[in-house]
Image (cartoon, rainbow, N blue to C red; front, side, top):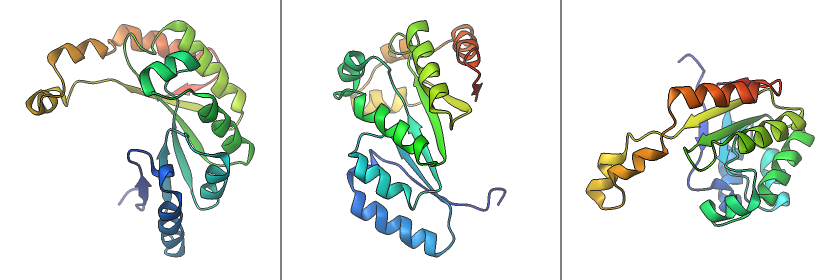
Length: 176
């Protein structure tokens, strides 16, 4: 009621099904429905450019700035992801950068500084949304046999979170 509603396409990765996504975006646009696409940006540039024509807002995750580390934890390098973020900024797409913050994986000062510098360089983004790892689903995962209490070590404590925020703000960006 407060936001007038809308649709967010997420997944997995919605850009992996570009024709179906485009069809849904067009149908929503015809009905005046605000549309967001929650994406990692790992898709061909021509797909990103085409989908951008029908998208009101991209919720864009940047997981790691070091390509080798990105590949280690996600299975793919980050070059395409970073290039597509730049593409979206260059064409004037509405873009919210989100940083899933995982303790011991991507919360080190070097990665945070590199991420903030990259985002500040996009010029079109003023805020980074921090998404700190939480362990709310740990019990469910344990019941399914796909996780354990040891996963809690990925959580980021409030002191570290404050440090991350200050590193990002030092680049002239806001943090949410």
